[in-house]
Length: 437
Ligand code: AMX
Image (tube, rainbow, N blue to C red; front, side, top):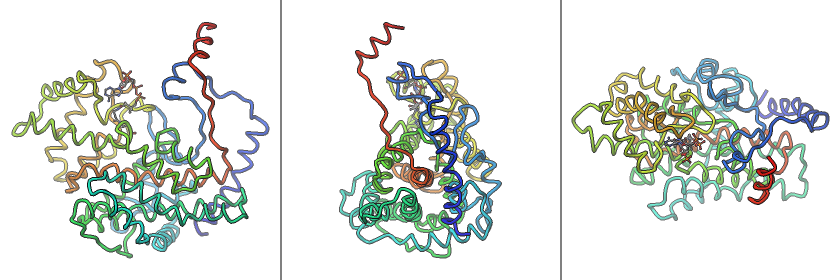
């Protein structure tokens, strides 16, 4: 059965569960809200639903119930590779099922029919100032594509129907995940390769084709597959996923929604942290260990300099996680198992920071989680393969994150989730409740 048909069946089977919860158990309490949560970014308040992924503070992310190693082990692998294709992962995110090779082949073929990016998108990117951040270019590209949104077309057709609206979100979502790596490659080539554009290779899966389009070597194909899968989803409350969900809850189409999500991803406390990690580490290397191995003392001193200047240590800490991020571990294992990369000086610095930073952050005493997150380890791999332009790293994150965000809003529409509209209160109200105890 084709992916869309399988998804239709899954959504129809799932709907009675949501309806029953609302009708029969709608008033069951699942949380209470405190004043510090209200002021402190709604941290930990249970108020979103998703079945695409779940983030346990100790264990880390599970995609459709599977840990990262389980996910990589379960999915069919790309030809000649130990890593699965991004397309197989998309099938699993959407349906919850591990696809057969034949089902993967169908998705790969479906994306081929969707990946042609209209010329007006490239024209719009070219019209931006050359020194625009690549995330601006990616976000603008999303908005430029909006005019052809199938969901917006359906809404404006006068035949809008809540039961079938998800099918149009699926169409836009699939177009976005198929096209976003092509757009990202265009931005990379425009900004950093003297506008040397490379045509799509129709024989390749998404990750491999991205590597091909940015002029990368064979080994990078697995880096791209791994990177896009690892960055795809981190349940629903993170800034990019939540923004995408929020904007789409107003029935804004997936292009508006994901452009907004990307704008959130571009923040230094979220997806820009991968760029900041590289910036921090390269400056540290340049200043302290041009010709010497990084010592614990040197790293400690540099970390304290950053903290004493009132800045955060990029790549460390997390709003939910309380242990080392398994996305960090997975990428670290990739480094350790790749000859050459395991001896790469920058990897040695990153590995040494991992030994030192948790102790320093614990002594500093502010962060609830002194352990590294995904961004502490992702840039060094890109650097090793020659993708040295680190202001592009958040674009890579954005290509991966599209998978999770698009799977989520497809299901949001399938289950008819409501317009999001939490209630705000005034400071005087909080003070009154505080006094009343
Ligand atoms: N370095 C220094 N201080 C840190 C810190 C870090 N890495 N992480 C948290 N803190 C500080 C916070 O700034 C906060 O200080 P404040 O009380 O003066 O405001 C205090 O510790 C408590 O913060 P927290 O509850 O532990 O974290 P949070 O939920 O408020 O924020 C995060 C989470 C990720 C924004 C924060 O840990 C951080 O800024 N880390 C560095 C940036 C980073 O790596 N971001 C990427 C996260 C993953 C991702 O989304 N890609």
